[in-house]
Amino acid sequence: MLRVAIGDADPTYTVALAQLLDDNGIHVAGSAATAHDLVELVRETGPEMIDVVVVDARLPGGPAHVAAELRSAGQGCRFVVMSALDTPTSRTTAASAGPLPLVSKLDSEHLISAILSGT
Image 1: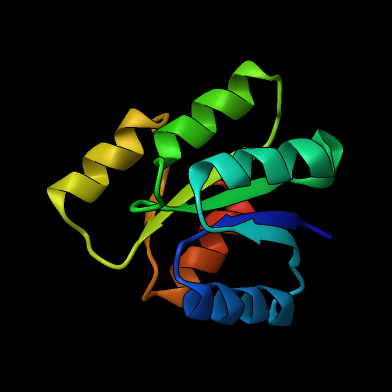
Image 2 (image 1 turned 90 degrees about the vertical axis):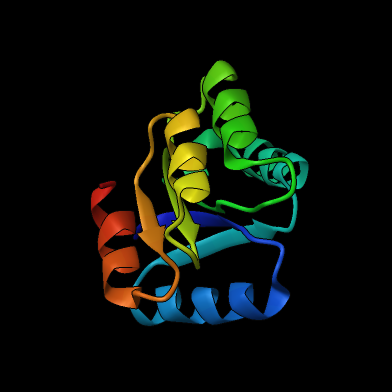
């Protein structure tokens, strides 16, 4: 079973996403509302327990911080950046973190596909 950590400051969306992922056979290992807390969650959970980190483009602290911190610590997880808005800022944010896939929060099929495939 694929294991995911979610980084999103909106608790209502986080609960809805966790349910969507669970309904699709994807285990949510945890969630955090800031980049710092997401990094700590993944580190504390253990690299072998998180396959994909799904991060909102507007997460306080930023997805680039999450990706850089986890990569420098040798975490082997994949990253997906999601956004409710497809704007130049969102695309720049995703590109600065990797580059990483940027998917719409509003397109659940594409989001699930990106999490499953890493693209």
